[in-house]
Image (cartoon, rainbow, N blue to C red; front, side, top):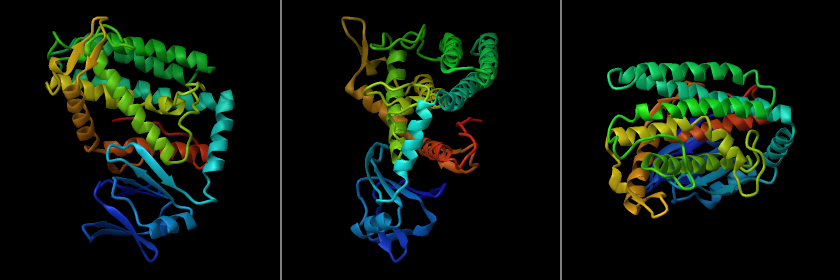
Length: 343
């Protein structure tokens, strides 16, 4: 249980929420685990199937407190909101900013700046932790190029120029990705990013983790009342959750890429988790998916200090915190959206 940014997060998947006067109480096996005054919160997000009492749901509706229900894995299930909740105004402002290219560019720069900063950090962390096992010069050169690209992001005149800067930096980043694979080199290697279908084990692993990350972020965005299908860098396309793809950019290196590299280097995933089809496509086996899902959820339970809030939270809550910050920026409560810059 963690109050953050006027939001109460309930991480215990067997907890039941109930109303006691003007307080929300957290119950487990009829034992009261915690009690919080409702007036402190704009929304409550619970991760579990146990649910909440009808009395609490009614009180949240009356007091315009959004009550979000997520699966223990972080998938969005439902949202209880009042008639005068500000989600309509929030989404209308989101649509206006998405239609305005200047406003879209400002947000897109934040997302890409976060991505490049975190990509540089991943390279520098690998170089620092494994100086005798990696090509230090290659990693340093790539990190320097990405740092220079980061400076160019702030000067980009339009979305196309920004995409070009990001694309070139991504090529440089992935050109040294194989340097960060320290074990199982025969089964896990990286020459280039390929997908639809992935043609090797590492690309298959990355694609699966990117899909998990996109789902987590889409759930977080929906939970704060934003439309995950209307983005700023990724423009509207039927069936594509463009805003989720926007926000996941800053998390790709530090969540998906780091988990993939850690699993391979620690031999938590092996070649047995993959199967190759006749057309060359590499797919995960059922057992392989289970292993990766377990590692993904274990990583989300690890604690970090959020660089903007300077509070300790679980990794799994980071997308939800960033979604709240994005909603506050779009509402005008923040002067700028602070991307997640890992330190």
